[in-house]
Image (cartoon, rainbow, N blue to C red; front, side):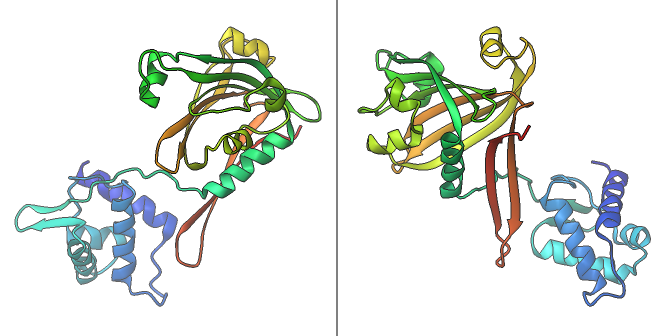
Length: 276
């Protein structure tokens, strides 16, 4: 990242946030916070050369002393390294962090959707999973897991919006067509002695294959929202892998984020059919 690019990025961020000469916070601290946020969020990347104190002063209309003090604060936090005659470089390595959501709220959202939508079971079987699923569960070549194929529809207009393929290990009972169409899978897992302690989810997209498009009343090749959910028990053991394929015209996945009084991000995910 060139010196000019760094200045351009910082100026853009400055216009969005603003430096307030009349405010109670000293200008050096405002500049320090702006520079720090740009480094922490990856706007200014690891190894990039920071502008000189004079360049910062000119770009932001500040004194050189103010710019120097802001840079000194960054160096004190080991976000940058200053070398005489060689300038200042970013030493912080940005790493994307997954958004953390309370598990209880997530399970409540999933179970609420399960109770207020319709499910159709296409197939239930205890099979030897494909190689990638066996590897995820650390299963041997001849060990089995329960595979379940389902379609979920809206309760009112009965519009199909989700196609699920799930693999589950450790089940003792309860995976019957009748029970699966009357209650949620999480309830069945609990009754089978499986307590979910952690869930990981990833979102992506793909084109609908013919068999999926047929079940969701779509055309083959139409875009689908893809959600992969991995559920773990209290011992950290993977017990369930679900691939959900959603029609984005009928389904939405919404996530609300807010800061509490301690500055901690609180996340409230909600998955639900769209209101037509």
